[in-house]
Image (spheres, rainbow, N blue to C red):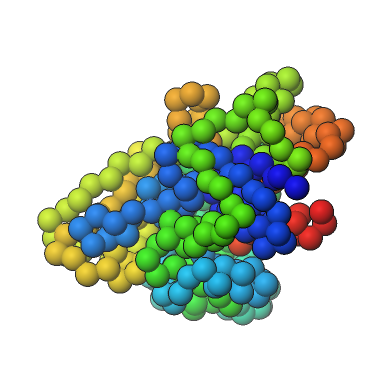
Length: 362
């Protein structure tokens, strides 16, 4: 059984290893000059830099954690994000610590008690849900967060207003009724020691796996089964039109001093044209007398000009994707997966879990 996998990111690499461990031959190809797709990283001045923006591994899925742990040791990094709000650097998502930083104490105490009475402690409430509450203080809070954090950031990130994208996307930006400043609360969190590229190298290190880079897919290629992790509309030659995506442009700057900012990631919802700045030495506590940061500028995806990053989820795109999905279901021994193949906003752990389930069902 010869398996051809198109795309050497985390989805393709996971599938390759799972199939190889079953004794099957795998050829994995990628048009890029490197493995690991968009989690590719490299070292510069002793700092592990993520070429395609900051990536933090987190999961509650022990099966996924155990699988990846076979190929790396973990640095137990706990991700904290800050945001520039009204001239102050505060915790993001908006939580009780943020509340007491941006508001006078008497108002913060009143709102905190109402949040606890209505929702409880350690609960994440989508901002759009909070806006529906029939309470003037909670409505004031909701409007404040909507304007100061959610609206402008969403416009920059997605090029759309919050009500023009799927609630599953907007739900990723909640109000967290807690004193926990971490961005994620998953049981397992960390960064692979040595970086993601080294981790993917080990995943692909198997006698049954052949890797071919700088290699586009050709329909004349031989295979018994094909796994496609690229965009599903591209596979079908855009028969029904292109699925829309958001892309990103990164401006990397090396500064000649030890530290640039006080957190690995700082968001800028209402200021500047970039959405956030990432500082990479935080992730693995890299020691250097320099520091490297990336300014992140979201932009529309244009075929042939930039990379696909995020599927734009709404009713219209869901209908278009379903048309392509119906075409794929008529094909034998051809499988689609990954963020582009499934047209779904996957975190890394969800992409791995999807591939584990797919390999089991073969």
